Length: 87
Image 1 (cartoon, one colour):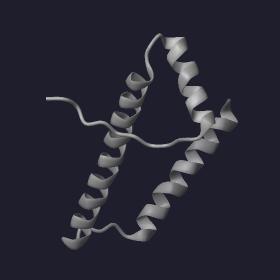
Image 2 (cartoon, rainbow, N blue to C red):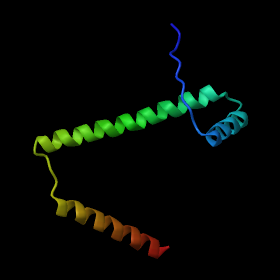
Image 3 (cartoon, rainbow, N blue to C red):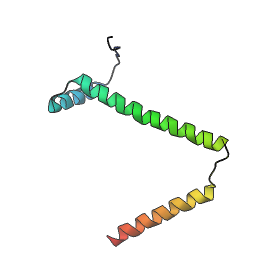
């Protein structure tokens, strides 16, 4: 069975960059476009799944108090600042 064909327009600058990448890697446009699309879909799918899981947790009452979250990030920032000042 033949693969479906996708067609879309992009800015000329992106095409030039794609062509440079293709030449530098000795791969065709299709190779890079398929790879980029697969990576994008993987990342976006993970993000959508994580959001759905978070909503399910919230609906089930599994929530974390905002002050706990703030304290975690303040502590993390403090440790990062301490490490940077030690260097």
